Image (cartoon, rainbow, N blue to C red; front, side, top):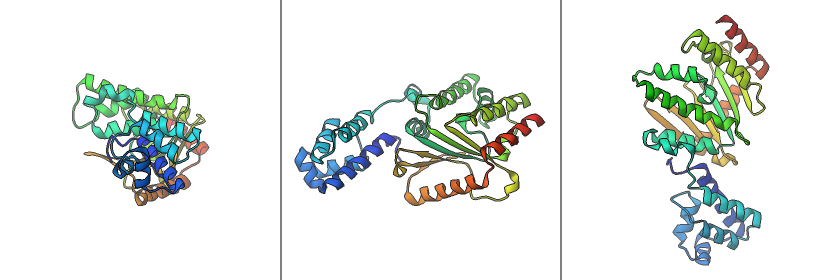
Length: 281
């Protein structure tokens, strides 16, 4: 998946394809009516390369889209090149992280399963700093601070006017692994308890007593667009990251997440377990 294929661009292509199908036009007919090639119309629908909003507007008119539909699609076309807050860090952010930040900024929901550490969106600064210091590649203090600043900035999506719906399932090992110091971990557990009170955040703990489960191979995130067809699975590895969007891949991870939700403790019981671990520290 290309770092340039953002959720907005994918949604634009999907919507244009649906509008053309509804009108009954072929790619060639649509292109002829607005003065572009069949290949150009196809490229707009398959999210390949840049788009011109004036062509998108013309296509919508030929497809018989309503004014509201046309305005929404043109807005997508204009926003497809929109740069996020992280663009100023682009030179030092890996391409995979650049894409993750783009998708996350546009997501309407995020489903996380974490089996090692607290998800970045819910980490405290001290916890995040301790993780960076534990990296096998030693970083300068200034670099650690920069990386932590980026992570803290990411968390602002949870406090914006229309935050994504965050559903996080944590393996019990996540809340029991002491990262940093006992005080750092206690503050992190308090942050989780606070997060579970938020109306747009759901947090569950998968207890050790559940034994083997469907996601034992590792953590993952499902980033959701406004339509299920726009979902992307993010999997982080020691040497890189994967973005999965094939339907069979999405189905497998969605099924795993549904299984985990059913196996995990409910919100109230999860908060009770987190509180008990807090008191043990």
